[in-house]
Image 1: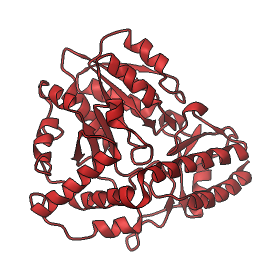
Image 2: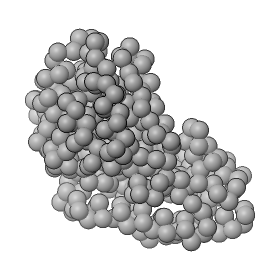
Image 3: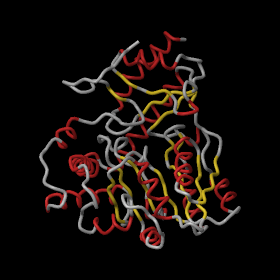
Image 4: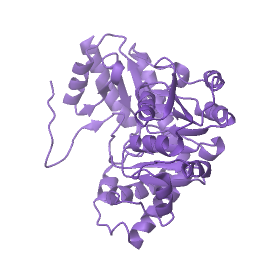
Length: 370
């Protein structure tokens, strides 16, 4: 069994096919190693502006885009604290572990939180959303675009308009799909669309980003006890100067600005989305060819994270370890799905040939374990 340790001299030599953090290309590592000015300097503000304007283009939005020094969970908590008044109800539409986490954030922040969910592997359908919204009045609804634990991509293009018609604000967690799957924020009317950068952006962890609508800012201005670190209103004030309220990880923001330039002006948005779709399709075909099964409902499979059912009763930890011996890392199932599933991340800068090489090796390991 492989025993991988911290590599002080060279860093990790593994090729990551995980749901995040993912492989970071050499050009990004070089970019973040460059010297920087302070976070209150003109050069920093220019870089910050490049990043936020790039995010607007990526998300097809005119809404203000903010940069947070946290993981995506920080913005998930910010949404709860900034947008839900004490006398209002918040609806959490859950299809897996991270939907459950958002609900837990609501509860632990003392908000009147209601969770409505479906069986893991299923999606929130328009019919389900209508049924739930007819039960009560909600001020804000929270939903995942891509649920990293189950490999399900919710049909947000159909569901978000239904939520908006109810009068609620909509917050979308696009953590494992933003920069890999197209989301048109303004067309859908999404009030907060959030993600962290260690997944489809292919950046090192440490940053989270989001777009925030004018309606969400207006609502936040009416909410008491928003907290300090994740206060949307303070973030907005500093963002007007192309800065953040507190010291951010400047090297990562340099990397973000560089990566957005690459995505928008070199690879191109549509080609990037097409590549991720190709990676998803190839993985699903591979699963079929080796007589395994996808865990999610086939109508709602993710193009960035494949959650695969352990239908061959494999020793998943051993399989992962054997693949590590070959220099690749995939991961076990998440939470309640440990050993019942395993997950392959195919996002960020992974190319089809990279995926084909890894899957060929994994297929041989599975043959050996059967």
